[in-house]
Structure formats: C-alpha cells, structure tokens
Amino acid sequence: MKILIAASEAVPYAKTGGLGDVIGSLLKEYGKMRPLKVSLILPLYSWIRENFPLIDTGISVNIPIGSGWYGGKVWSHGSSVYFVECNEFFDRPELYGTSQGDYPDNAKRFVFFSRAVLETCMAAGLKPDVIHCNDWQTGLIPLYRKTFYNNDFFSETITVLTIHNLGYQGLFRASDLVLTGLGSEWFTPEGIEFYGKVNFLKGGLLTADILTTVSNTYAQEILTPEYGFGLDGVLRKRSSDLFGVLNGIDTEEWDPRKDTNIPTNYGLYDIAGKVACKKKLMQECLLEPGDRNAPLVAIVGRLSQQKGLDILIEAVDDIITMGAGLVIFGKGDETLHGRVLEIAERHRGTAFVKIGYDESLAHRIYAGSDIFLMPSRYEPCGLGQLIAMKYGTIPVARKTGGLADTITDYDPSTGYSTGFLFEEHSASALRKCMKLALCVYAENRGWKQMILRAMEMDYSWETSATKYIELYTRALEVKKTLKR
Image (cartoon, rainbow, N blue to C red; front, top):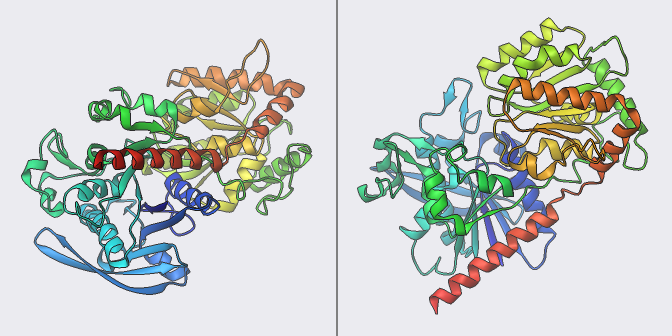
C-alpha cells in the first residue's frame, strides 16, 4: 500500500501545535509497518530550508490561481519527505499568520499547496493508493481529486480527510472562489459556500472517501449543533463514512525513564525521581509555597478560550487558596496573555507564567507537576493528558472529546481512576473538581496508586496506525467493488 500524507505541518519540520506532533508521530509509526510505502508532503517554509539538508528533485509545478500562474519546485529530505517551494507563499516567519492575525493570502497559499500535491504526484510518478489529508489546509485536495484530477493517474486513489479541530475551517471571502478555479456551481449550500463565505474544509468533508477525527467521542459530538460549528448537517449526511481514531503519543520522545530534558529519570516501578523533578521545577519557576509538599498544578499548551483559560482565570484565586502552586506555560490569544501574567504578579511565589514555547521546559513541567489541568470547552483528542499520564501527572479535565475517551474518572467508592473529570464548562464546576482532586492528593497512598495506574496506560501510536490502515483497506476494497 502506497500512502501519501499531505499536511501543513509535521515534526520535526514545522509545528504550531498538536497537528505537527500527530503527523510526525504517525509518519514514524508507519515507517515501522511493512509492507507500507509512506511519503509526506509539506510546504517548504523558510525554517525548513535553513535547518535541513534538502535535495532538488528536479520537479517543477505550475499552478493556476485565479487569472495568474504560480511556479514552484519540489525538494526532498531523504527518500520519502517532499516539500513544495514557492517563496512568495511560504518564505515567511510563521506558518499561518502573525500575532496581528492570519496572513491575508492564506486562501491563495493553500489553493497552491493543494493543487501542487496532486501535480507533484503526477510529475514524480508517485501513484498513491491513499492520500491522507489533514485539516482545512488540505481540505481542497479531495475535491480537486474528484474534479480537475479525475483522471487515469488517480483512478485507483482514495482520499482520507482527518478533522483535527472542526473549529478551524479555512473560511474566506466569496470573491476568493475564483482563486480555487472552481465554478459558481460550487458556491451553493450543497457545495463549499458557508454563510456567504468559501469553506475549504467543507470541500473535503463533501468529497473525501473516508472522514476521520481524533477520538470516538468527538466523532459523535461534531454531529450536534453544539460542537458542529455549522457543519453538523454536512457531517450527519456523511456519518456512515466518519470514524473516530484516537491520537497517540510518541513514546520514544515522551518517556520519563530516558527523557534527557528532565533532571532525574524515573519509571513505573521507581517513581522517586518524580519528587526530584518537582523540586527542581519549583526552583526554576521561583515557586516558594509555605508547604513544600503542596500540590503543583500545570497547564502547557495553547492559551485560548477553547482550552478553558476563561474559566481557569475566574477560578484561579480559589485554586491557589486551596493550597496549590500553579505553572502556566504556552502562548495563544494575545488578550489572554496579559490576564494570565496578572495571575503570576498577584500570586508571586505560588504562581509562575511563561508566554512562549520551549520543548525542553514542557518536558520538565510534565515531569515535575502533580496535576495537569485541561478545562477545555471542547477537545477533539488532546495530547497533553496522554503525556501527563505517561509522566505520572494526574489530569483534571472537562469531560469532552478525547479527554472523556482517555481519562478514567475518579470513583470515590473504589478509588480507581487515572484522573478527574467535570461536565459543565464553568468556573464553579472546575473549582469543585479541583477541590476533590486536592483532597485525594492529601491521601498520599491513594494518590500514589492513581499515579501508577496512569503510567500503566498505553497510548502509543501502534493501535491508532493499525486502525487507519484498516480504514484505508476497507475504502480501497469498496472502490474496487464499485469499479467492477
């Protein structure tokens, strides 16, 4: 089976968030599976050119966008990773935009990339059985496959589209339809029109052979108006082709037994090193709570309302009053940066905030914290809770999406759990759940058992990758049957 993964980011080449981690880890897992032949194609961002030795494949592409044509070259890293160069579109400091907002020509940029993926396949003689697309940036590929590229070369090819976060859809002005090359017949509610705008993700939802998303619960949630972001009707029509495949984590990168980023290694059968990691982290973050055994609560990731920062800000004073220390690390909405920095100023010595991202510091926070907080409004899968459990850091999270699928909620009658869940998205529900978690933390023996259960959980990529292969195989068999 020949698989081409098309994405806008993947570690180690480019990353803004969880999508990059997922694509990089999936590619690595596929590399272990035989007899698969797997390739990855990305835009050639400036950071990639500066940090990786690239080979000129000799392939050029010429893409029509609106009334103009844009040329590009194809480079490779190794034998299976391709990059599409177009300096006008991708030689920029960030992937999608700056702190001032999205790049105004994102529609042009990802029309170019989507068509360039298919053109590269033909020019390179790369005839994939499966093109696995990811999020809105590649949402037009399945649509183009069934329109402009409905030819003999791709006659055996199926397309798969994974929804990593339905909240991001690639919405552009109606006038940007001309950039796609598609006719006005596509600008209808049955096509890619969406409340007067062009919707790139919708193009993929309508035309991909298989739709997946990153947890079973999220696959059900997005069929409802509450979580469907206006596309729940489209998804309900395609529900028989929609599957939840839980993300995994790279267990080679995220392993406290051999993690070189943390001060002391530890594992399931010897967790003493976690205490040393906590001590070092508190020193690094200048935290000096009155009680050295006080629980340390952490947030790592994107600072946004989707991640529940609004209800945390409302509840934070009470959480710290309960006796917890707090570490917040990440970046996101500019309006929230100032508000979380105020928390550190107000609670100097018990709260630490750093805006930005440093992979090494993230590892130290996962290892040195007692509780990992994820009060998300919605969470398609979430990687933070999976990493936290691997490091024996207990998640406190809202019961939604992948959080509901991966965290076993605390049962007071048995004590059996790997974390704590609350249902209502409110500061009061968060306070109540945190109070329970801190009470259990005070019962040292029960907490240690919870740590061990969390560390025992297996969220490696092997199971998820196997599920994807099963879906590809099923769709290819259906395609062959229909051709007969």
